[in-house]
Image 1 (spheres, rainbow, N blue to C red):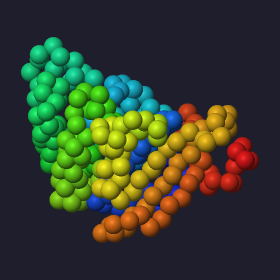
Image 2 (tube, helix red, strand yellow; image 1 turned 90 degrees about the vertical axis):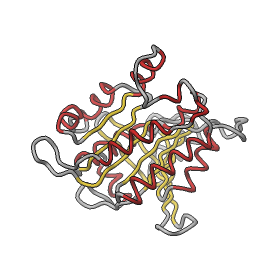
Image 3 (spheres, rainbow, N blue to C red; image 1 turned 60 degrees about the vertical axis):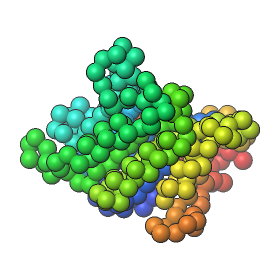
Image 4 (cartoon, helix red, strand yellow; image 1 turned 90 degrees about the horizontal axis):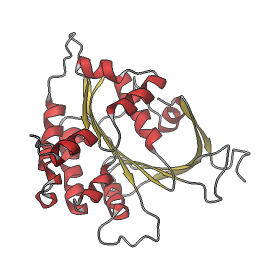
Length: 266
């Protein structure tokens, strides 16, 4: 969890908005540090977390979580964390093992109903842990949704999936949702089916967007990139606030600077 980012977004594990759809995206940079932030943030907040890890193993997220002061293993054992390891599930489908969660690998045209049903079951499970803990509102995290494009799933099917998840998690259950997508270069030829189209579609659905990019001036040792933040009030159709920050990722956190306040970048 990154305290400086909490300050920028005016949120803490003890006080945060509900029913939020937060979109994290990147281009020529790696925004996965924000997924790790939100995972540790919501676990510390005592929320019931359903995490679709489609690109990394559980051990990877667990190792980063340890550096941020949370134990994913303990959270999963207590029932606070439900983790879908996409890499392992995908292998099971390829080997024809019994699994319905990632059934779209066999038939991409069938859509993502199986994956949505997994999410729905996970977030609707009892809020009480094995030791009698009472979990807070459900949270869905996905890292990263755009990988489904490479598996043959259409942009339309992915947007429908996100909309169904938002209706269930954010609207009905008053929980939150955080999704990461990775964008192609701006001049990439993906007008019909591609990650840029997916990101634009999700921007219209979310109410907080965090977009990470490399610096326009190129590599810098002291600053790793810039993060653009868009806020939209619930019920509004346009974003009414936008700010840009420079950032540097550390082993156990990240530092953020309002653009123009860091001497490392002119």
